Each structure stands twice: as structure tokens, then as C-alpha cells.
Image (cartoon, rainbow, N blue to C red; front, side, top):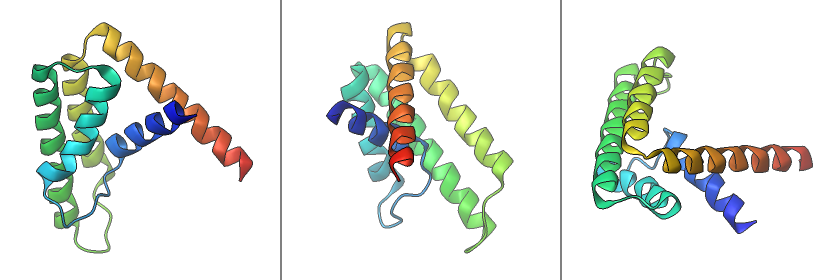
Length: 120
């Protein structure tokens, strides 16, 4: 069960664009990078590449939110483009084994989330 909760937390953090605004993008990029390092056994080079991509993604999303104005949602197409760019970097950085492990963790998280929703 603990493994499932960690998986859910990993992919929620990675896919979520709403982080506390009091932290810098660099601070907010640390946790998802560390979770990926732990769950996927990233090398130092991979960790650096993913951390930099995460910082870039967070800054781009923050800029998009600021441009949209308070109370307004950022453009969905632009958000998709930012996420696609990030996902492309992650895919290019991970090995085939790590990609398979990430896919497995994502499926487990989705199954756990579906199970939790059925209980509610």
C-alpha cells in the first residue's frame, strides 16, 4: 500500500501545476526530481537534466498563469505544449528500463486512484 501511495504522490506532484507560490521554482522542482530519483534510480546526469526541465516547466507555467491574470485560467493549449516539452525531455533522459518502471508506477497510481474514488 505504501508503494501505491508513493506512486500516487509522485505522479500527482509531477503533473500538478498548482504549487505553493511562496517557494521558488527551483525549490518546487526539488521534490518531484527527488521522487523520480528514488523510484527510478536516476543517475546524477539524469537527475540534473530532469531537475532543469522541471524548473523550466514550473517557470513557464507560472508565467502563463501570470499572463492570464488572477482568477483566470491559463490557455489549455499552451499548458499542453509546456507539458509535452517537459515529457519529451523526460522520455529522452530515461532509459528503456526506467520508462517501463515509470509507466508501471503511473498505472499503479491510476488504479489506486480509481479504487479510492470507488470507495467514496
